[in-house]
Amino acid sequence: MAISSAFKIAAENIKVLKILPTEDELLELYALYKQATVGDCDIPKPQAFDLKAKYKWESWSRKKGMDRGTAQQDYIHYVDVLLRKYTAPDTD
Image (cartoon, helix red, strand yellow):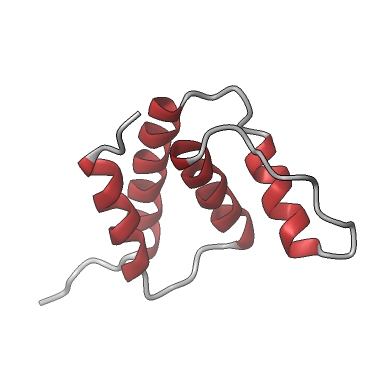
């Protein structure tokens, strides 16, 4: 499946946040992005002592079975939610 232009734009737009989302929000973004671009998690579960890799793997693995188009749409929506949450309105 081709990556939509809206998905590519969302992936670029999320990089402009001045306030970093929470760890859980970042993990959700990661999981949706990976599911949209790769599909089901195709890497072995990391060792328990590598917590960052373990959390990322678990988040992505929870998306198993979600088709890439749905993952793209969910990612676009989630980026929009985070942009509204973490971007202050202009006061000019």
